[in-house]
Length: 458
Image 1 (cartoon, rainbow, N blue to C red):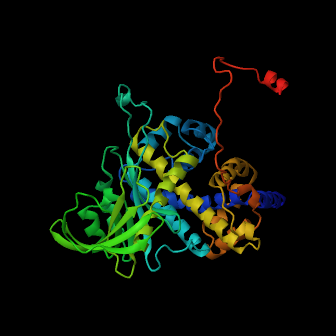
Image 2: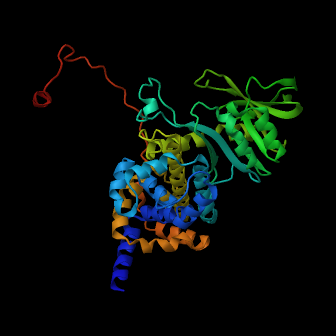
Image 3: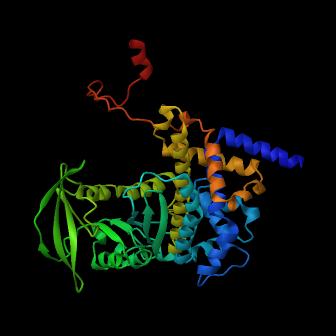
């Protein structure tokens, strides 16, 4: 009993001093509950089977690597040796043979576990009331080292695969990952699995790479809507009168009715054209967007929806910047895609932490706090640096109740923890305008100079 009291006191000290790290650890316990993960593996795995090494243990190992607690699988294995009942070679063999369908299921499982919490907390303002926004994009996994025998004499960078990702920007959750082990595959070759998940009133936002008959027809057939940049290869049978509709931050907005030839169909669509104030990086001065949204959704709103699709690119940038999502040492496609899937799970946990902090800010009576911009880097660093210490100081049994705590109670608990946040530690630094650099004219013909001598002369 005395030991339990000690652990409780230690836990409470972490809550008061580092509540953000405690939130992340509790959410991780919920998203990566071992029994659920092992059941997921048994349901989806086709070739692999469980013996001594459980799928949940693989996830634990990869999670500490992806989150930066250990720099490699080898070092994570050394630190967790007592918890892993197989050799390092067997561990790598299991990782290398992981099937893509298992990694896909892992991402979907994390969303199912965390969505009730984020729904209780309340997401950000709706992008388009009455509709569910889904942003679609692909990510090619970065080239790996040439450790595999088939790669030793390759001059070209070996690509271990690609992943198509569907994100709900209003919650920040990644709801679907579709993986492919062929690093040269086209992103749009994977869209069938995405279309199969479309529900009525879903709005799919995507770049022109996905402007195909398969996507446009498939989304519409399932009662969904698309907001996709027009590709020049889409056949246009007729064009209506171009009407000016107003402006956005990017430029003037125009709209016209068009008839498209999509496979054997003639399809009516709206074309929204943005004449850009500033050309894109590719030099484009205007952007055409095709959509089947009803006329009740204005052209300006559609232009704004497409402009905000960059949120998924920000997701990829955040995952790459804050997590080890693409491990150069993992040459086998199955292992590389699994690492990326675990990084997306970590991103989902981070999205819930952000939702908690937003909710706590709204409730804060100090206007400076309620309007404060928070630093993602500071949040991630607090979580990363405190996890090892919490794992040692707080007994595993203390985290288990969070696995199945009712969502309303869990969300309320997270907000209570957020009351201890020292907001100054997470304030986002606002960059000042860069100073005009003076031309360096002294000592041009000298390789170096003594700072001490210059200070003495000054």
